[in-house]
Image (cartoon, rainbow, N blue to C red; front, side, top):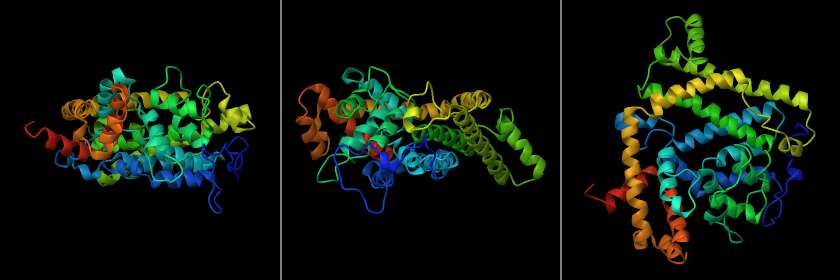
Length: 385
């Protein structure tokens, strides 16, 4: 049974292009299914989370999270939290599944590189690009471009990290001009759940992946809040446990601490504020779904450790430099020699008009690449490098 402050399917604001209701799926189940069947979702399989997908020798890469496995983990956490709070789990899952569709190849390194390259043409933001994908770039339907998702799904993609202030990224501005997403307000509680689930998932799995990559050790993690006590509890309950099982048992507890904290904080805040509708959630001064202040401070310490020891580890920095150079080669080449792109993209670029709109077509093409395709294209076009 859903709570009064949840989003109710029968109260959805609908779709930009009206469609007949499904006889067996709610609007957000339908949104979820369209995202799962999209081309952009499939490409997440070969997009980086932290480690470059092709670098299997250095990092035993088959074991590491990709953008797709990360997204699935976020969706699982989102359903769990939403269910515990009486929210609509289908909408929370939908936003979670869509939240990273706009990521380019090579993770945040690729985003940084494309943001710099696009600076003269309106910039680049992966959340805005996700909206561009689901409203324009996916072209499978006879009646419309995009996936024609519901207003609530689009709102969640746009605002799951909070209200969006001017100046808007151009891709978001285009969507918002067509359909007002009320960017100045909070998102629904379901979208807020998806945002927190993202934090839970990557903090948990980056500890796993960093250990597997041997960028730090369990002994070093023992100095961190939350993580250290988790290892200590496992050692107390299971002395002499196999090292691999010890690692999983400890990090499973870290995961549980984060999820339970979010649920407890939300339950307390909801009981005190007594929102009676989804609009009440949107109108609040801040998010209703968040970590407690003590845990938030502990997570900041964990993130700081990961930033230094994992995201900026010397081996990762070298790879960041390499893939940045690839994008710095590919983007200008496609911009000034459009024939190097496939025919479809070449025609779109030629019909774009001015250089700004042409650059945005090139961005759509490059941002949609997987890691392995970007690497292969660079090897084809720059064979001597």
